[in-house]
Length: 112
Image (cartoon, rainbow, N blue to C red; front, side, top):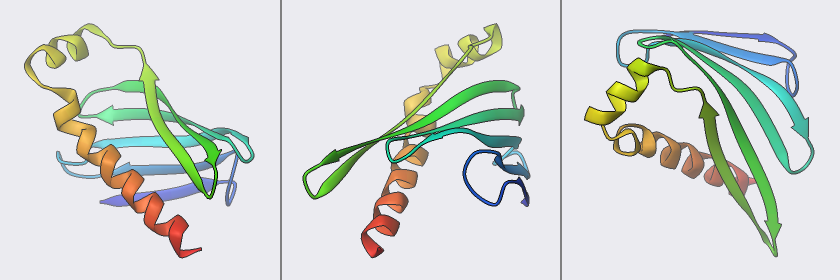
């Protein structure tokens, strides 16, 4: 997979793009807003296998000695995506990726 970093080194304006085989597709993301310490907003554009434009958001809420992290994604659902969703359980398809990503974030945070 080919990966490209750009824009700011970190925070608002930082970009990441990827291009790979049919398993990973092609797309890009850009951090568009950071409200420390509680929110990060990312513009997420998929090119392949299906074009889609979404907003991903991480919301962090302190809870005693821990922090509750919510990772959400929203965006328009064109007809082909709706049709695809009838035949494929999207939670089963990408839910594990969200779970793995949150587990990785937890492990990194606990190292600090």
